[in-house]
Amino acid sequence: MDNQEVYMLIDDDGNEKAFVELFSFDSDDFGKSYIVLVPAESEAGEDVPVLPYSFDKDDDEGVLTPIDTDEEFDMVEEVMNTILNDEQL
Image (tube, rainbow, N blue to C red; front, side):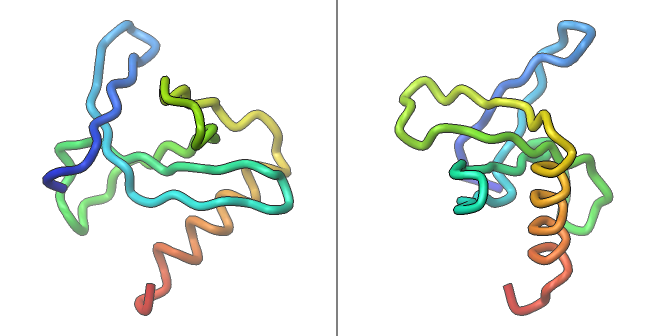
């Protein structure tokens, strides 16, 4: 995961952790862009937590917004499963 932008997120305990982009995509249905992050120190094939967020591509500050509706999360989860389970992608 070299040469990827690192996202520093703060957990519930106030600890700063590094994450990198696994993939990103746009949704016409919700009119948003999404990014899926994984811990920066994770290894290929390792079972790691994934963190999906919505974001504004045109915002230079890089603000990530948590997904807050079940419908939106279900859509993101479906895209994640398709991408992560399709060997051709």
